[in-house]
Length: 295
Image 1 (cartoon, rainbow, N blue to C red):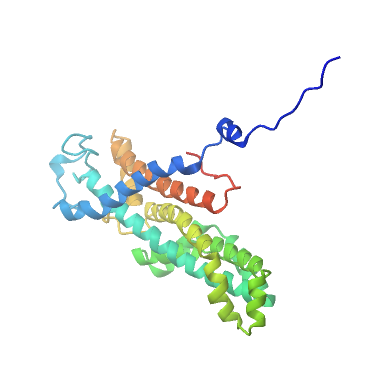
Image 2 (tube, rainbow, N blue to C red):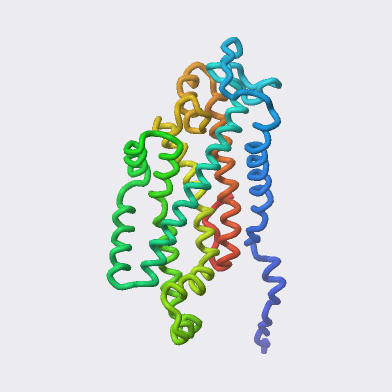
């Protein structure tokens, strides 16, 4: 007679060692290094290098990458690397300011909807649905056209079209926190709605709001690039990733591949670095949720 097999539980240490899932921390190092290099270059290079990124040198026009010009020169002889550094500084600044504006607007709308409830909640959500039904880029073009193309118009248009995610996150978190015992204790203690919101609800949702703001930065950078590419962003002579890619269209037919490759690579690397750091932060806030970002 054959004895029945004895099943023994596998230790958790062996399961963890055999699991193919790796910690998201491995993405932190390359993303931090790339973003650190870009931010340092955007802040330090214009201070150390005494060169004008608008300097026109026609004899040096359309030069391929070399030791003197690592990213080559454009059709006016301007150094592409130096213009990429200036453009990256502008793009990161626009992304940060626009993300902060969207976070403030979204937090205000979501906090009022979740705290007051009732007709204000329904009205706020209908407003969110109405704005979400219009493509962000189309609505941004309308706002920029009304304000006239400028850096301020670009920042305002991005901030006013990207607050929907923050509003939904804040509202859902507040609706969940309203059922917690500490909120009931604050109500019994005589605290007003405003005091409960400021002292108890907002501090508990601050990590989620900061995460949503960080995730909005790459989206804002791409939005600014699209507006500049369409001629609705910064002036044509200003250093912008969108302006550089737009100017490089004419050079592609003549073999000037480096004029579009350099700003495009810088844009993709910078946004992936910010997205990678945000993905690690998101996984730490919610370990059960796998990151949707693929590296």
